[in-house]
Length: 255
Image 1: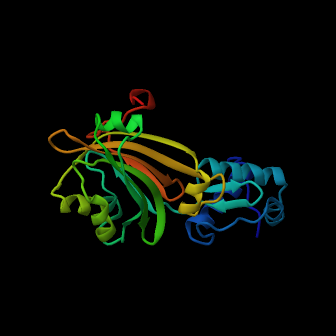
Image 2: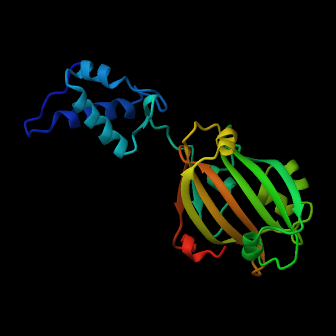
Image 3: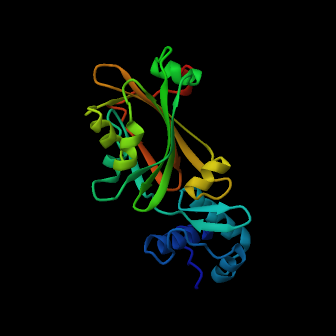
């Protein structure tokens, strides 16, 4: 590989190398998820020192083009599999599209007579029981999310039975006569995946998940569902529609 040529304007070598690598990634010569050569190899290929290469890689990482994994090397960041829109009517099937094979796989379901305090608060349950479901979401054959759902049991009897058949929360609710529901608030954060989440989502240790906590309600105002969904940050981008949706900060949510 020939080293980049310094431009007449004095464009620095590390930027030229970064542009070269960016071009190779953009045109597919370096595929998403592929590993870049080591700093030493790149330094030799471009006839520069390692510090120059290090500056180039840092620039690409800052732009989200590559990511460096400790002890493993530097990799081309995969393209996002899904842009998930969070608004008044938040549906995974709408984000994925009708032909992309989105499916919800139930892991477990149970009736909880005395739900946790935050669930009681968010759903205004009083003394009523709740239906707790743990699910996995797949899009185009890739697992993208793990979710914990809490439903007001009085509104959703046998919802878990329908979910096993339909693989869709929306279709399962329709089977119970609930044709529409709306998002009342969402809180978005990010953290390191737990060992269990990493296992379910096929993530490496230390990978990041995007966490969306939210409440949905029926059109008459009755609270329907409180969820905590953990999305793979490397596969999902969240698009929050602030024009029609109230996004809260953590301090606004009572636990």
